[in-house]
Image (cartoon, rainbow, N blue to C red):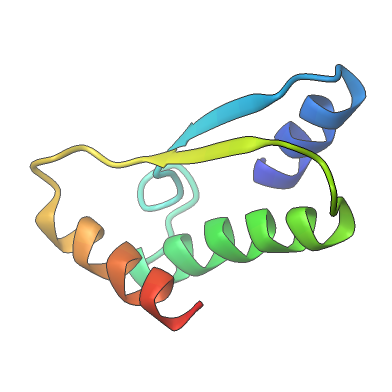
Length: 78
């Protein structure tokens, strides 16, 4: 889902995209799996499309503390 959306971003010459944190319900993934899949998809896209001025946001609901903590851990590592 993320990779396809990012390719659409590129094909349509859009400059920004936002994703809600997905996967925990829709894809039946754990928080760790969902976070890892989203971040790794975004990073792979960015590595393959260097030099483009893009804004890619992952949107987290402020009351989802556990999910926020998981994403914070992943972002600290990268």
